[in-house]
Image 1 (cartoon, helix red, strand yellow):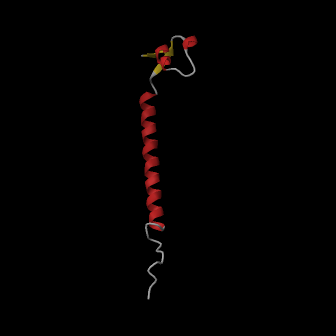
Image 2 (spheres, helix red, strand yellow; image 1 turned 135 degrees about the vertical axis):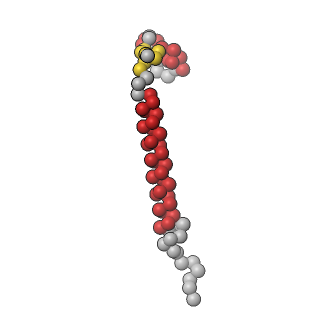
Image 3 (cartoon, one colour; image 1 turned 30 degrees about the horizontal axis):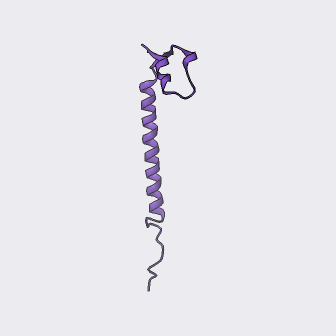
Length: 71
């Protein structure tokens, strides 16, 4: 008689589950890397100029008022 509690290597808790998790994590890594490169390419040519460097504060929402985009 076979033991019904034996562990199979191709169970979701075993080798197959590990392979599924690895493929899922590599897919997420590939997508986030591709997205990061795409965002960097889109914003690499957006230059800006700081109008008033003395008016900048360490943490402030008003810092956006002190720069302008250079076209």
